[in-house]
Length: 385
Image (cartoon, rainbow, N blue to C red; front, side):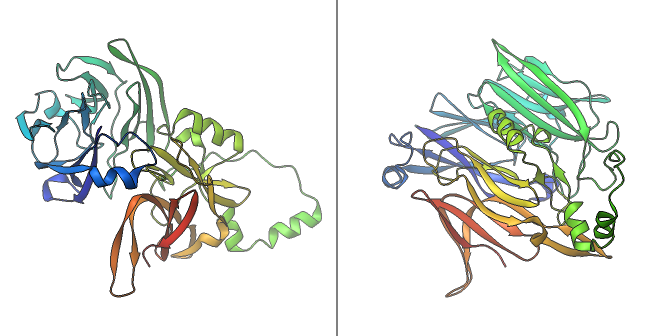
């Protein structure tokens, strides 16, 4: 089995603030046996594609050839794992008109590439066959909105048959364009296309709630006594699972049934608290969200394979993650991220590499801890203070 991982992200001048990564290659006959990481890593052969740094995803074709495009050089490339031969060719003309953000994405089997294309005055999410370059799907035209710090949405192949993308756009004000595509036959059909307000943007206001019925006198007195911290907790931005098109469909449906909303950090101002990684075993694709219900949030995990820990961890009141943001503002400041190391201070500060991904649970601007799944139980390591 051959798998890849993007490592050692760096931000060179030409990438406009985006990181480009080395492509790490793993190949082992035992790798498909999930849960035997410690055993197969002894025999795992690992190398790095030479002279290549990739901006977006790469794909493994036929378990022997790794392909990619763009990144540190304006080329398309392929790398033969057996012979360690790297082949480069000029990027196709049509790809030279693509947006750098979000990065283009190959389907896992290398049959298709999805990217944000420019055609004179119009921009579309375009899917082409690879390497022929035949257009197999295209979204309606949009007006991309680049954010600062640089993050321009994402294009994700959930599996060889399903494509998800969300793109910050300026259509109808600061908005998010959401796309869901399905592979059918030799093409890709866009089955869902939505544009909804980007509530993480400070210029977007939520619709006014419907008028409430008059409260009894005691309740009016209680409301009048609400302090600024209670009010900040109540007004925390919480997005529905449907606002995250990248979530696996079954997980999104379950979150809706559980009554979960996903609180957004006012400290970073970024759309987040939905992550994915290998949280129980290398090579297993898992998802996690910060699920808020009744003023309390918990990290809720959707396991993608048989290696698992308890699916709920680190429950805490949302109010306990409020902090002053300056100018009299108070905001929710909890955020989760995928992380592959933890921080130690004893004997000199250093980062310790983890066996697989962990979940960084942060009180933004203050401290964090790394939740790590091992032998069916969660372990808490130190993050960054």
